[in-house]
Length: 103
Image (cartoon, rainbow, N blue to C red):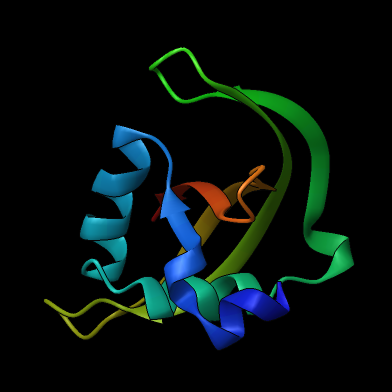
């Protein structure tokens, strides 16, 4: 994960749903996603599982869940968000990511 801190370009949203969630919940700001990944602890780990990208590719991903309080930009209200992140390292060294969020 150190590579993410140094170069967020190694992070790739792997599914269309992930791209939509990054757009919706992070305003397409991959640096914010990197910060969220950086805040993960070993206790946030759920399991390892096979994940498909919808285009026939499969990756062995580690799945994590983290809950955080965030401020909603539109209302200024504090809401509890549950983030679900799955990621793996590809053969080329890129970190492939799937993320979903629930408010």
